[in-house]
Length: 397
Image (cartoon, rainbow, N blue to C red):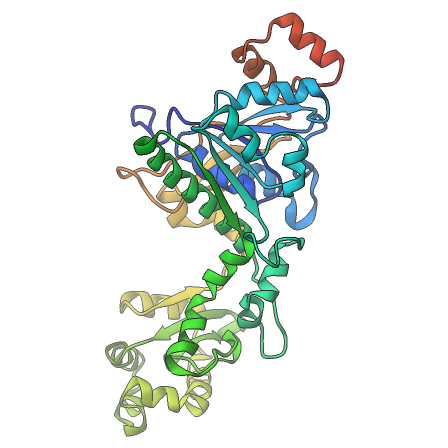
């Protein structure tokens, strides 16, 4: 957003002890909305910085708009520096095992005694209960929470293709922090917020739970389900291209038949209503596949777009960098990777006053803001130099 417009969480300071995806997502949400988010890293850096493969993009995505301070929390001086930062904070966010923060004296019970106004956000695998001793991952909760069952083919549970629970769990942590901050305005007191992967996943499949509650019929995995709509599929067309096409109402069915000259299908009494067409899918879809196979994906796109029918190209994530809509609407912001290369990063999918909350700070170098933040906390240059010589801090790359 433009510098003249105030972001909603300007003036809020967040100190986060987070890694991987869930905790950093919470901080990213608050940071994008204007909060000063200080990421406390080990002096050798958040291990997420060094992930390969599917984790290689975690750090630059989820740690934009943040500052980095590198502290050795195993040393008393490192914990003291962290406590001085926390004394100036509105929110503390963490996603470590409960015993880790308690051992460091950085758990909610300890910090609330020092600052009753503090909002403390914990991101866990499970909310307190019979499962809370288990180690959770996104894949773990997708398997035990019904999402993998719904995503894969019958008998072949499949993890969703992105870190849905980690990301949404962090978002719910941020929503909880926002709610606690709003309540603090009225009561003057902070509180602990807990967000969990498993419970997040259960919310994602709640529609399928409620389908069973209403109908008495278990939800079938998505690839094996009985579709609610007759034309709602991926079609392989000319030159092996693929495209998703849909006609989900009786009106859209008429438009579809008119557009392609399928008067015989529109007149067929077996295909009069959507429910009729759903019952006829076994022979209707193969027939449509045969008829549409001679068209290119581009031709089908033109017809569907012209007639207001639902369609979608089958796009790979890397192709989205060149998406004309995202680029035209400011949905991608310039970002500098930690190694100095330039790229673009997706912004939040909403606008405030007609603008997307944007990028104010690039993903921080390890310890980039250590000296600045320690000076603000009252440390002298000599004290900072001493902490650096003792490897209590890393003062920046």
